[in-house]
Amino acid sequence: MRAMMTKKYNVIYADPPWNQKAGSTLGGYVKEHGKQVFSHLGNKSRDLDYPTLTIEQIKDLNVSEIAADDAHLYMWVTNQYLPYAFEIIESWGFKYSTTLVWAKRSFGGGLGGTFKINTEFLLFARRGSLKAKLTHFSTWFQVKRNYENGAPKHSKKPYFFHQLIEQTSPGEKVELFAREQRGSWDVWGNEVKTKVEL
Picture 1 (cartoon, helix red, strand yellow):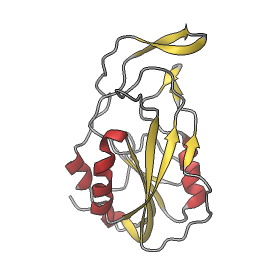
Picture 2 (picture 1 turned 45 degrees about the vertical axis):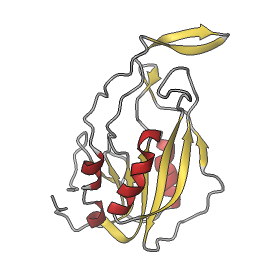
Picture 3 (picture 1 turned 90 degrees about the vertical axis):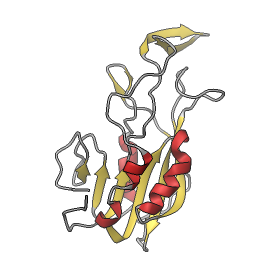
Picture 4 (picture 1 turned 180 degrees about the horizontal axis):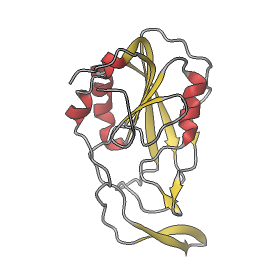
């Protein structure tokens, strides 16, 4: 499908629904070794509660057609899909620049094997020569997870990163795979009303 609109975006923020599992189901809080942690209602990973896309389906989105000639891309990726994310960035018409790290407080269990995973990556890429509004002196951000009904909400990213992007990158903004409307940003995804077509 081709994008049907002419509006171009200087800032594209994407949190693709990678085809992977979620962590084990969480119960309530318990104390372990003097610390309050979530109990797990089993050790098995569970299916995600939203539809996912393959790498090829993500690549095939016509992001390059809605991107301005001078634009910034911010794309979330997990450890498992990090090698493929660079291919997607290129297929969308951008050049990789920097990896930003979201360090989440570990609460026991979770995904991973030898190393339990408590980080996610926000890849920053460029197209053309959009000048940033300011310089940051770190790529490491320790930010609290979003909680829903007393437990961390899977995959939901903190608003901190929206604010970081607003402070950094000027121009028209769109969030792909959005879960809700935010300010003056345009949004696209199966959970929001949108005028953007990919």
